[in-house]
Image (tube, rainbow, N blue to C red):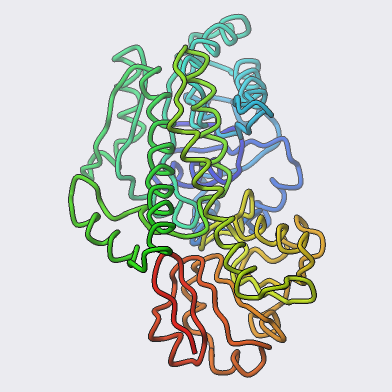
Length: 435
């Protein structure tokens, strides 16, 4: 089958490469000429494990190509996937301008009948809007489908090649049959196909992301209680997670969630519910607790360092999560801004996100390696749980920092490991270890 993928960002590029891997002829379309040229040259516009290899393999196969020409991308396309961003407006409502532009592009340049597939996260009833919009433009028969992505940055390729489920919303069984054909290689492997109407699929994506954020905030609220009581939040999470009705995933306490998806999707979900006449106040608490997690870390740093002026703090990890160079709404960068505003000299290191972080935070000293970042530091804060941090020479780090103090914002270390290395250790929601 021939597929056009409109927008080759974090979702679109993975989607295009995966569909080509599944045997389809895929054209990736983006208005950003430099991005297209970068990809064709074999360089990825962002870091995602295993993506470069998958894209290169499919380019060599001839099943995958990239263009900035809409007519070329849509020529003969049976499916047009919309994979563009839906950022938040100031009031929390999703900005769907890119969705509208992508749909217009598909409709104006379609050369035959096609199925328009919403891959982007959109508010419920967006499908109705697209139906009207394309009906005014296209001379061809078309159908609208909602097919939300469930990709995790840092493991997006694995998630796309081995999906946990495929959700498709369509209002015609014949369209579901076409989508099953498109995803046949995955369905043959036993992947579940959830067939719903369009509105249900649209709403399900927001419901999933909001619930995952709720679990994170619940763990962070528990951590605040554990900090005061002396209990161990990680052990509590393990106990909770052993219950199959709850599950262990997304119950790790820390600095809170970040990234592009959770903050804007929760704001959009709240806006959607409000527009439908329901005030989803629980989502306000999720956001409030998430913000408190960062403030709690800042308060710990202030408490242990006393006066923040003239102090130096090293942040280990600058991306919002490991496995990505994405710093959008990164808790690490938000913490850096707070510390810099308080008069702290802040250094930082990240295996992948250093350049992006340096461009986002004025005054942040981004270092080339963790030892440079730790030099003369009064406190080292683990902001992102990159596994390679546990492999560092922490005895060496103790010798170059001003004060052997680790504030573990992600509970990456064990108290025993920190103690052996000679550090005072302040975890999140777990008992501290003092020298």
